[in-house]
Length: 235
Image (cartoon, rainbow, N blue to C red; front, side):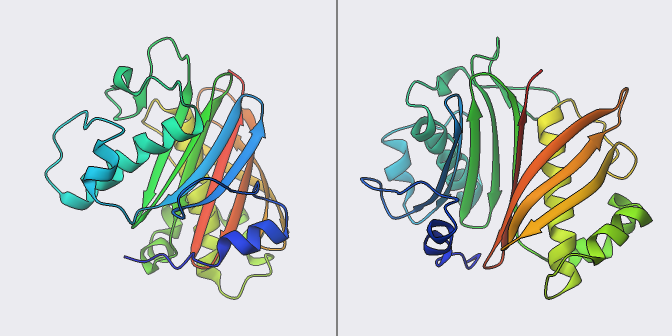
C-alpha cells in the first residue's frame, strides 16, 4: 500500500522541519534531530529482506512477508538513529511493547503500509505513531473521543473531518505507546486539551489521566495522506 508521501521531503525542508539529508538512501525521507539525546525518522520500505538482514537480525519468527519487512525496517531505523543501539537486547513485554532492560535507550516504532517511523531517546520516555486516514477511524470516533475533543477538532482548518480525526487517533496512539503498560481507555484515560495548527503541522497539549493526571505535549505533521505524531518526556 502506498501512503502517498513522496513529496514530503521538499515540503519539510521548506518549513525547516527536517534536517538536510545527505549520504543516506532515498527511502530515508524524513528525519528530525529533536535534541542531543533524541531523534526520530521515517523510512519508506522499497528494499528486499536481504538488504535489512545484512544489517540487523530477525529477532523472532514472523510468517507474513510484509510484516517481516516492517519488523526488520523498524530495527534498521533504530540503528540508523543511534548506531550503538543494542537491538540484540530488545525484549517484548507482556503488553507487546518492545523495550530494553535498564532503559539505556527509550524507543518507539510505528508502521503504516510501506512506511516505518521510529523515535529513540537516551534520556526520555517516547512514543510515536504514523497513520493513514481511513474510514474506520470515523466509525469508532465515539470510542476514543469525548464531545469536547470532537469540538476541538472541528476548529482545525483541514479539508475534511477524517483528517482531523486521524490527527487525534495518531496522537492517542503515540500516548499509548509512551505509557507502554497497556490497559488504557483511549476515551477516558487520554484527553486532548488544545491543538495548535500551522502549515500542516503543530502541537497538541494533552493529559494522560490513568492513576494520576500527567500533562503532555505532542507534535504532529500532516502530509500527503499520512499523519506522524510523537512525544518525548522525562520519567
